[in-house]
Image (cartoon, rainbow, N blue to C red; front, side):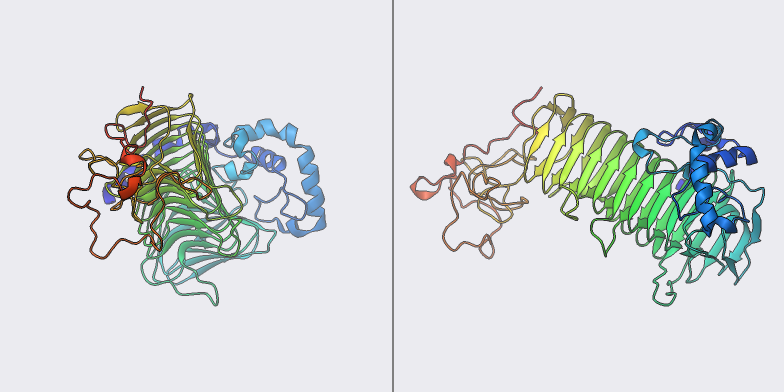
Length: 534
């Protein structure tokens, strides 16, 4: 882990000068002048009732007034004139993300002309109660940066070589604000950690090193190391990341939010005993989406690398994901990006976590490599449908595709399974007689060593498959093969080990042989492939 941290930090200065693929060009790395900052603010005028375009100034108390709303409307009208100035100082964003990130979200440096400077000190609380830009410096133990401003105030914290180690409280605690920006100063190295058990703040379970009860934006040109005995970063509303270098080690989730996580830039090195990125709202299952259009992600976790409740959309980025599952949500769409997955359960999994979206996996582009562990694993697993419409897929797995409804591969897609190109998708339901079917098939009850039959249509089944079915079960619950014996509950007899009785040839008495057990011969095919091998 230490070597990974050192390597990451050494790359920070170089990475800051590179192009942010998902957010725009490196022109944003230039310093923000007072003139261009004003232009950027004007072109990102907030809606009436929120902060005005003077949000970068420490003396912006007029944001909450009616006059501020009028100023916002006027600022919106000047958007065209200011846009050319703003372009030189911020990251641009793709059309897909234009409604996600504001221009200030994309600014990687802060206008510090009127900023206040605060120094971290042992046992102290740095209290911030009004909008503005605050530069934080210093080393301290048991120090908390506490933001408790009005719900119309925007606060920007610029971390400039800050090191805080706490026993039981967050290093940054956002109690209230409209939005808080945590910006790492260019070239700075910052470390925030909590080493003990978190204590609650009244009824609020403050369980993260950075804990925000309102919207949170992370950006900048420096680095931030976070170590936590619970969660790393937690935002109870929306979380956005547009830049910066982050090394996060957490016992629970590394990065979590309630309503949404949106990322268009940044370098992430994450280790966690639970999830890497996690978005879920316990009180509203229609919330909890993740959108990623850029950034570099090296995530090694015990559970899910990236998990959303509703939708997970990847428009770009470079990913190396290792965990029990790599990508999980109700609805998953991959349009672009370079994704490498190492998983021990499901590589990409769509399951019904929300009724707000269909259970579907759509792959429209990108380069995806999936290496699955041995055992009952699937590269793609959907409790709905899987559509591979484009992109390049290289899958190494016992089971490549497992779906409940429909699975299709388009001619535009390039799909390789276990070294062989395929053009059609074969489902990996398992099959046969048992609750965990998948080992039945050939007339002699055997299958090729080291392989798992693609989808046995008959045979005795049983054993170690995932979803035992009788014959070929359709979506309306009907079966094309044999029906179970009356009173059979799907459970195997006590002591049954999945092996066929000696001499059993796969045929049931009276000709109920599941089409003689001869349709389950996918031996010699790439698992998850089809008879159409190119």
